[in-house]
Structure formats: C-alpha cells, structure tokens
Image (tube, rainbow, N blue to C red; front, top):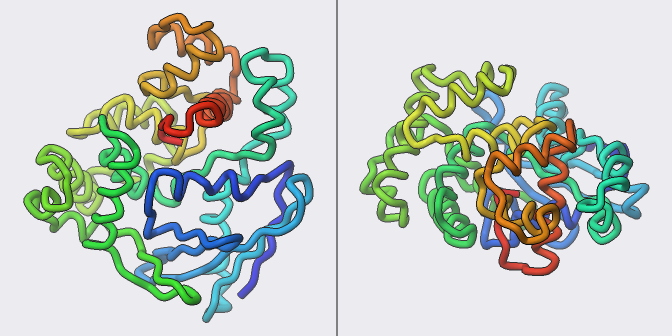
Length: 306
C-alpha cells in the first residue's frame, strides 16, 4: 500500500526529522538519506513502513509505503502516525503571520523556514522518553533509550535495515529495576518506568482518555503519578498532544532561549516566561520550538525536548 500526503504550508522534512539523530542513535526511528523507517504497533500486530519526501519546501510531497498490506484500517493508522511525526497538523502559515510582528521570532522564520515540531507517535513512548531525559543531557538520554529499546523492543526488517518496535507497556511492566539499572538508568527512573507501565496495563492510567482530556486535567493526572512532574506534563501536552497554547517554562533550555530572545539575557522566572509566552496565544508551542531551534543554530549542543 502506498499513500501520498501533501502538506498544508511549508515543510522542511530533513530539518523536522533531525531530532531523531541530533543527540545519538534512535533504533525506533531510522533515517537514511531521504527515507524514514519505523514500525507501528497496531492491534497486536507489528506494521513496518517507510516514508520518502520530495519536492521543494513550499511544494513538497510525502510518500508512505506500507509493504504487505492493503488494509484500509492499517493504512489509516500509519498515515495518522506519519502526520504526527512530520508535524503536519501544525498551522505553520498562521504562526509565521503572527511571528512576523514579533521581534523575538521574526528573525527565525527565514533560517528555519518549514521546520515543524515532531509529535511522539504514542503517549506511552513519549512518557518513557520523558522519564529517561529527566535531569540529564539529551545525548546520554538517547543512549539510555536506545539500550532500553534494544533490550525490550522487537526488531523488524524494513527494507535493508532493522528497525526496533518500541517496547509495549506489558513488556516494561515486567522489567526489574536491576535490569534497567544495567542499562544505565538510575534506581528511581527504573522504578518510575516500571510503575508507569503497570499503571497503563492495569488501567490506572488510560492514555486514550488522557489524550482527549483538557490540559489542566492532563497535568493533574500525570503529576499524580510517581516520577512525573510539571516538566513532563508540559512536554507531554506540547510534544505528544500537540496543544498549541503550551509553554514548558520549567525546562532549562526553554528558559535560556526565552531569556536570550525575549529578555535580553536577563534572568527570567518561570512565571515571567509563562507570562511572556501567553502573548503568542495558540502558537506558544511553535514559538518555543523555534526559539530552541534558533539557539541550536548558534550553539549546536543546546538541548531542549524538541
């Protein structure tokens, strides 16, 4: 099965997908040239697929190939995941219209034209990744996550490459903390991941219901779980649910970016950052994404959960 997608507005596909190799290996999201490969978990089945992109930024095309199936349901599920990964549902045209009148953002449009945030393919994958990245640099986080995927995930051949399906909650619910510690996770993070997986398996945390809940409810339910704080909840809203009016103001990289572009280098409190971000309205998520990307243009080692 082949599916062709035409983005509404500009798309810099290579720049958008760069996060999957900026900080190290990502066995679940494989990029080789102009091909992206991944494995979807769909109703207990592993569905490998590959994505190619072509054309200029303002007139691009995305071709999705799902070998070995003609199922409309499978095709729809893969298409939905690809739209998330390429950030196709973000209103980039509207954001640029707003950003042109904002001194902090206007200069970033040209060098980052067509850049979109990638959304996590699944809520569980996002939360495990967020726990992994807590209070460490992204290079070390990527290395830990890669070891976790290879230990508990499932290898699948996609074309000439092997791509790993991200571990499901049932598998990680059975993981022992000492096994995760062997992968360089701290004891607490090992327990957080296991407890998260068990909450999902037992239904204590309904991720489908969570995705449809209002933002304050999402924050309340996530922060009620051990190991998940406001930092994780904000990034979940921004990079999994794609909510536009979200600013992860507690993130160190976000704070530095806002201070640089909006505060003239002055130290800003979390409250001040949230107040400044409210001026961007429904485009807060995109604005933060662009500020972080702008910082990486100057300092490639800058992180941020983008």
